[in-house]
Length: 136
Image (cartoon, rainbow, N blue to C red):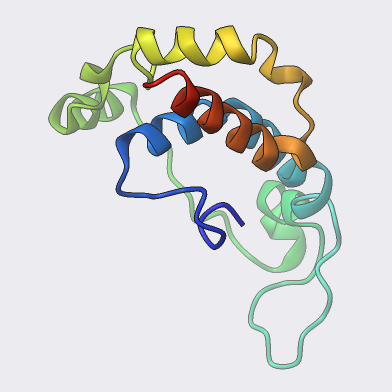
C-alpha cells in the first residue's frame, strides 16, 4: 500500500529509516502468524504432493510418524560465529537505526507497541509527514 500509493520510496534513506522503525511491530505480527496459523494448522491433502500431510510443527518434530526422516543438522556455535565474522553482520551494532533517528521516531511515537497492525501504514505516513514538516 505505501509503495503503490507513493508514500514509500525504497531508494530514499529517510523512508527506509522510518520503515525500519516498524520492524519490531512487523516481527511481532509475523511471529503471531507463524505460531498461531502457519505452523499450527493441518495441511490439506493435495493430489500428487510428495510431502506428508499434517500439522507443520508436528511434522518437523516427529518426521518418523509420517514416514519421513529428520534431514536437518545441528549448527555449531563456532560455525555461526565464523559466518558472522566473515559477513560483518556483528559490526552493525545493537540497533539497526541510528540513535538520532530512533530518538526522533520515539519522540513522535513513544509507544510503538500501542500501534495496531491495521494502523501501521497510517502511522508511517503520520511519522513521515511530521518529519517532513519539521524540515528533516
